[in-house]
Amino acid sequence: MSLTEPIKVAIADDHKIFRDGIKMALSGKEYIKIIWEAEDGKDLLHKIKIKMPSVLLMDIRMPEMDGVNAISLLRKEYEDLKIIVLTMYDDQEMISKMMEMGANAYLTKTTDPEEIYNAILTCMNDDFYFNDLVNKAVLLKLQTKKGTRQYYPNPVKFSEKEVNILKLIAEDKTTEEISKEVFLSPRTIETIRQNMKTKVGAKTIAGLVMYAMRNKLLD
Image (cartoon, rainbow, N blue to C red; front, top):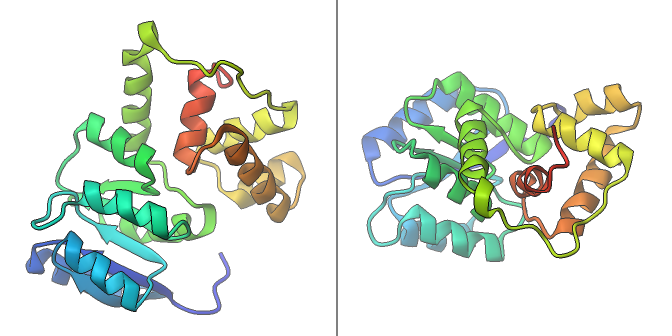
């Protein structure tokens, strides 16, 4: 990953001790700059209008306005903002809901600081960070809906190249790794990925992968 300036990171969590811990854990990391912190959803929405971060680390349960309502409002206004949910809750229904709403990653507060750092870099480079927690939640939701699965009336048809790239995305391959496997430039991979999202009306890579799985495009 090539960066010319630090990644601007904001933290929204109602526990100051936790915010301080995250700041301390990330303070020594290359490329990271904490620009502000918020104690609830309302505070978050106020501060983001004043100073825009590249990445937001956000809890779900907060007073005044929780993360669920906040992410809904954020996605309408800030399409390029990378949102990483960082919470105590590992409920699989909540995980799949937050990813569908537009989160770029979902981590629990027991996550090692190194993985949080890696998730930030990955989201900046590849838009999303899929870990075992997210993968299991998405698969469980699809299995639960197996008998009543909703398909699009006119399913989008992908080319063989697009399906191949979709499979590599689902395997959590980075843009660089995918480009080497299919012999295309990283910029071309990003363009194809964006085109596929547009085709199915997905806002996030998680939405694209879930569409592909629902319509049996992936093994």
